[in-house]
Image (cartoon, rainbow, N blue to C red; front, side):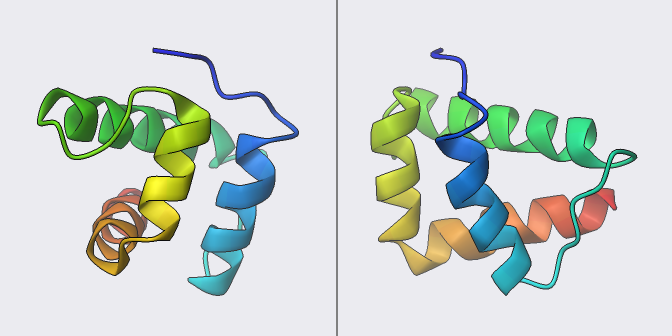
Length: 78
């Protein structure tokens, strides 16, 4: 799986998380990153989104169900 570049993926995911009311900080950023990686990996294995981060973020952004699933998984963690 492609690595998520700090400036590209975290900018978009950070916006998504902010909209969901999730504050990213030094204590939870690594855990959130792990959940995002795991979610995209699982979804790509199921053929629901691309393993390419640039494509995956667009696919998740355009799919309310996927966004809700990802946010729910992150909220369970923190």
